[in-house]
Length: 181
Image (cartoon, rainbow, N blue to C red; front, side, top):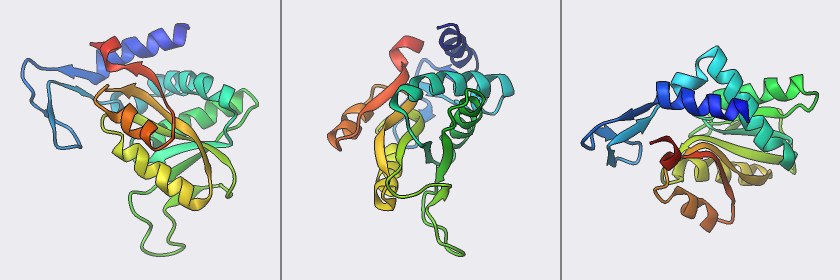
């Protein structure tokens, strides 16, 4: 797939930072010798389009009603997929999972045009331990959504897949970090 190769090159060129020593602090608190900042892709028009197209091609065979995940990493991916899917006459609605339920108004943790019982794909930019994805999965299930899987751009291959699958949810990743290094 031409777009997948283009996305891989964009990630390697713009998003992947590698050091000789573990100097990058991850959200888990762990230090690593490499860091993947996918916002260098998702906040760029070309990058967002290519990522939206590649993720949509992966998702469409699962026929989800919606896709989204924990804010902020999943948000631009969900929006890109929604635009690409609409252009293909197969709309997949985007949604956002807040880290905590909103403290006012409707007090929602999930924002989007969703109804209990709908099939959703939980999106993630980078999976390390899987904790962010699992937080989104839990919120979706509590809302009454059917989670068909976690779909990540990059699996860092550091236990996230095992943690997610231990909860009975499959993980699909566009890339493993070993493909990018």
